[in-house]
Amino acid sequence: MIDLTSLNDNALVDWSKNFAGKISEYASLFGFTALDEHHINEDSATTETLVDTTNQAKDARAAPSLLDELVSFKNSIIKGPGDQVRNAFPAVFAGLGTRAAVGVLPRMMSLIDNIRKNPGLTPAIAQSLGIDDVTMAKLKGSDNEMLAWLGTFVDKLKVHRTELGLHETEVQAANSDVNALQHVMQQTDKAQSATPNHPQLPNLLKYKELIANGPSAALTRAFPAIAPAMLAAVPGIVPRFTDFMQRIMHSGKLNDNIGSELGLNAPKAAPAAAMPRETVEQREPVAAAAPRPAPQPAMVPPSEHHHGGVPGWLLPLILLALLGLITYTFWPKPTHSARGVPGTTPAVAPVPTGPLTISNIKVTPSANGTFVTWNTNRPATGQVEFGKTQKLEMGISPKALSADSQNYVMTHTQKLTDLHHAVTYFYRVVSKDKNGNDVMSKVGSFRVP
Image (tube, rainbow, N blue to C red; front, side, top):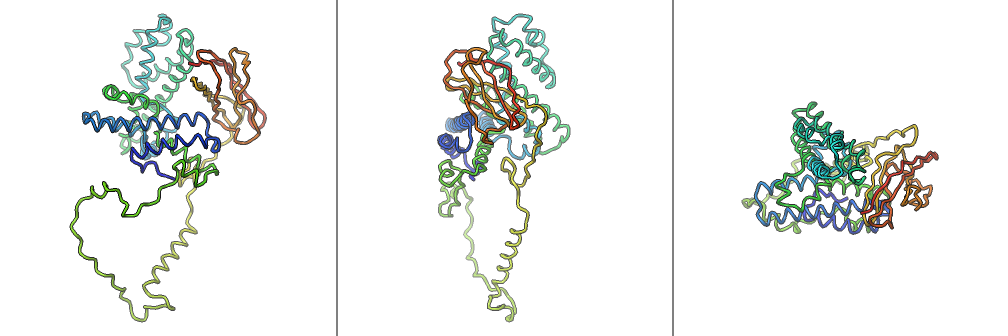
């Protein structure tokens, strides 16, 4: 499989554009959902924007301080924090999911500013939300005080959403932001207390700062095109693409032709003569080496030059080859985890007992289709009932499910289509496990923009 970390920026852009353009042809073959396709295209576009913006800034000879910050931001979004940081502090990144956003605090403050300008905001609601003048004036304390205040704010926001005219997805996004920020700050504090001298701790603190505050205001003013990239930071675009590739590699349905079309095949090593010109030119000049003397035969007694017709100089090579064969045959082979990481043994998660439950329901409306996602506590099917009234009269999606095991999953995504602009719809998600136990959510609503 191709190693994306070995590609330079421009090559990564070309690869991601090809992968995003081709994946729709094979999405059903590899079990990719429409939401997967959306994320792949979104990450490809973000990669291109960041690389193009950085290249243009270099060409325009931007101020060195801004250019350095831009390059650092680009690398953080595309490459993530790096394997060394993630491996050193796994608890910090384990709970962040795959699409946590950077710049949580500026985004929350922008939401609060909009709410404070909302004509539907009354003094009582402002006090309930904790955004009245008295409370806001006190927000100069520690990270823990800020997190506690934000937690209360998003909880109360759910209560007053209708009065403020906010869409359900806005509240869900705010809740997701605060949960991510709380997690990374709390886990980073624990890591800092436990290992204050860890060599990777400065990089972790830098990444926490990025998630909390995002790039500087000066950078976003100088390069406004980078704004969409703030919604796709953790664990990084390259790690996300690598996860998608691992899913394809482990599907058992990949062949050489499809691998070639998707750009998954590792490039063959180029001969020395094909070395890129700029690589050769960048080498330091060295003095001409003296002619290498011809190799001399090993000094062994005449009686040891041949053993049963085998030249004496060849015998060590034969023994070395036999040793390599024995080592390869009997040396323990690395196993592969569920994410395809060599050298780790996949942990078998216990099957949860008790009733089947639904959690983390999210709705993402758009003119091209509305995505409904949720989780169940054990593998189950997933369907969405919907309609223009709470009777959910428009039916269920998908209309039928087979007994195929691929329908029993813990992360569910369904796409609702043929919905009309500026119309409010009601929905309910339904899941059923292999034992016939079923569960349904409360009826929710969303509005198509």
